[in-house]
Image (cartoon, rainbow, N blue to C red; front, side, top):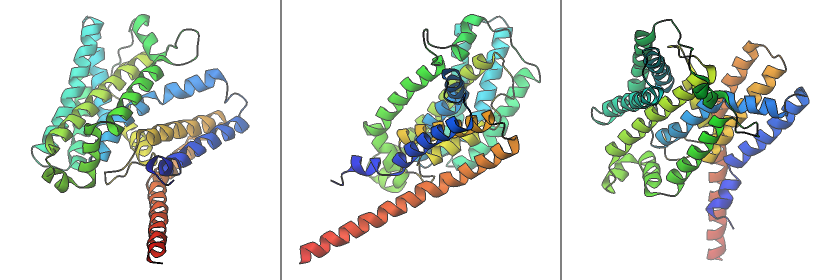
Length: 333
């Protein structure tokens, strides 16, 4: 009975889903408006950019890499979108060029990591500053805010007849695609193999550099898409959009059970972690908790994101060792 699906349901992902349920219960006790449709719609809208970027960050971290430049790519792509629109470029072309810029930024990260053999942590810390600087070079301190309602409605509008934000629908589709790619394709199995043991993956014939390059391009592309959502949701293109967003993304990915050392993690765990963080922050905001407390809670979640999955893995490993020892002893008798 201890097959893999059952073990997964009893693991960290199940604990996260339970915590989400507890957070929903706690939020409803803190404020009467918490479980209203309007507030839940607002809650999901506020976390959609984090959720989008967390999908591709999950793939990057499982392959034992990291991308700290995602928030700066959001700011740079938002600035480009504003500059192009202010210059009179048609919106479809402006959106296409914004996505191209995001993919190009990811390609630069991936090229530096895979071709020059530089550590992704150092590379993306550098490009974090570089891309944010380019954002200010493009747009300066000004903001572009005269986007047409037809497009901004895609950022903060809801599905007709419901209170479901349109960007959440896009996130749901991309989450399914990412989950299938990670858990049911040779590409996903290659990511786990590379993250668990890169040298063994090379000897197995996997194209490690090309796979990692693709991951960084996907990360940049998703960050550009998140920039479009962010810009339309706030109806404002600014160079400082999404400052600090990378910390929330990484916290969600690690809290979701993705090992910082690579080779382990799941999409469902990351999704549960994104909503857990969003629910806690929303409930505390409704309860007029000071920003200092919100910062402390976020810091504690970051620590929990490292400790929790590791403790769960140790407990699971201990149970497996005991089960193996019992089976061996039984066979000997």
